[in-house]
Length: 423
Image (tube, rainbow, N blue to C red):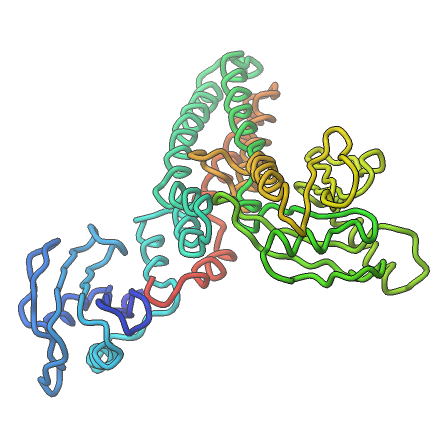
């Protein structure tokens, strides 16, 4: 990691402004080769950028200098804020490439250096990756909370308490004459910390927020499922005919309702069939019903699958009689009831997502937090000081994996590969 890297960190040109970032031990020297004198640390100044070999004028840019370790990567950093034309950007990048010891950065390399230099931990890096990929307001808020250190700060509090418990256990092993004596207060504090971690593990996870809440539209053939999908989406995404069994496979449409990500899914009509292809579609529909977060049931409410979050929908309300109690009447033809239905979908979908402002855990984070919880639970139920101390050590190791201090080499390449070239 002794080489110096550079890349375009802003969006693809053309643009009003292009930001080119340089990081590494030769960053300041490279900046001087292009811009001449550099401004003081953490200040900006306008400079002419010239090719380091020919002296040709490349651009006039705002130059910012950051000194290690007080920079985004923990290294010396130069940022060049210039004009965003393709030719200008290409010329400045070519000028940097002409300097010996500099190379183009790999995707995510700036953020990886920030992680390796202790500027951020692994949970913050994951938050940054999620922030870049966020497509809805709820995704943005959750990712920003993580990227700004929401989980890191909480882990630091847990680690401090855990270290105190470990010190208490080790001290008892070294100095207590009665090796069998275990302080009840130690066990109580271990169990209390374990219970606190379990509360975090019981919260809704971030996967639904990232992937979308699965809202499945199901019912018998010709119940109006495909028509309802088309009416909600505002275009013909599903084939609609009077022939039963038209839909053979599920159709998934991503939506955002009030900032809540939704995966609206049309399914094959549920019925007994001897058609081999339709039977496969029915089987998939049944699996989707079981996997649904929210089920829109378009059939007889008494025949509805037993799902905790279910909305009974009375379709074709413009031509069919009054709805049964507890059903929402809708007409895909006139649009009657669609807004009411979507409001109820948004409400139920929001109930399975993390609470706004809370820090949601991803699968990796939950795995390591569960390891820490199990170790603390075992410590709280222990009877021998040596075993209690070992369980507390295992909990500390789990926290180190959670923050990226240890045992995460296998996830780093995959994580930082999600970033763009100049991040």
